[in-house]
Length: 231
Image (cartoon, rainbow, N blue to C red):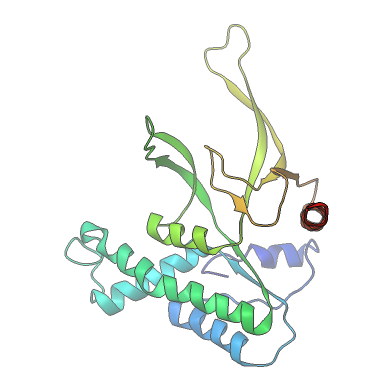
């Protein structure tokens, strides 16, 4: 867990999630050390969850600011011409993704990365710019991560916009149901390499959402195998 991302503790204490080994990481070097330890030592862990990528990117930013810019966050340092973010993406962040690849290949571990999102401006090359959901990360780091991942999934609430007669503004209703979006949309990044449906119902609990997701992967694999046999 990146600094402050301790929601897992609340879920465990409430009995909503089974206890699992977890660590809150406070600096970039410690994160690198944990990944290296998981790669080099014997253990029974099958999955690594990183909560959250944007939190760890902030640790990476701080590390680069301290080591490359003498701790200067100003225009003469990290923030000048966005140079610090570019150093992060081209150097340590690329190395971080490579380290995760090595962990996955060496230990056959599944790697799940969570990220916060926010509404950002999309520079549309084919027309007017518009707002869409974007991970709360610098664009170069996110582009690297997006290309690296086998799946990018977006948990989207189902909201209906209504405007009744006499209302001056539209209202959003719903939001208590969510789906996992698996393919790119104008509203958000998503992709998959597992023949998944465009949306997966998340049901009424995290357990049900996970079960539906695993079933979708199984169905996608069977569908692909059937297509190859017929071909």
